[in-house]
Image 1 (cartoon, rainbow, N blue to C red):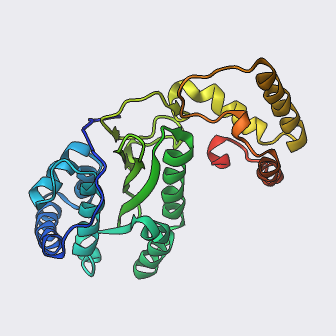
Image 2: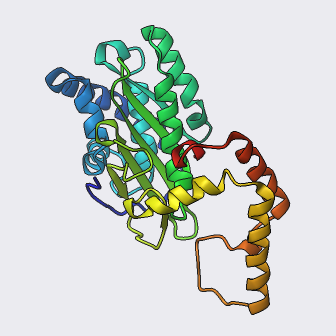
Length: 278
């Protein structure tokens, strides 16, 4: 379920140390109170609510209208719970830029601490990022991924954000495990952005047939698929269509030699469905 939208202008820069340090201390006290009163799963539920998350950032003292509230609040929460994960009942992995790519290793480190198998959480982290970067083509490039999960590994939430330099806006994606029955069909608890442009949403319920066709095409011989694409490309060039302003990719943009390598590697795997393909 989508639970709200809000403006997120894209701002650069870095939170000053004196502010971040205070945000970290204050967030620790708020988190300890929420966990004490309602349990660790309640904290994950609130993190997945975009309106609560935005208000939380305001209470911590960060700019109320900035895209930086996403990265800074997540960073402050991650730092504030370090060493207290077992007591609070949840872990935080990932972050901004290069830190986001360390998420799988950080989840595995938590698994070692708890003596449990969190391989399913590593998958969940990766597939949520794949959905919002590849299956949801909205013009926003992901640069932040934060994964929250309970110490038993049964519940988790995700806060990730993409940027569109052209419109100078950011889009924040919220996930909550208890709301998800299918990773590739209406999985979001919310998507927040002030720019509601036309997008290719392959995780919409209406895109079910498209997902099936795409998955089947990935199991076709690469040469057959490329042959058909070349026919369409030649036809478009012959007719010289003038297309409107767009976010999607035309065949004239594609390097067919590179595409053949991608098709070949995918064909060798033969994915069973769209989620497996992602």
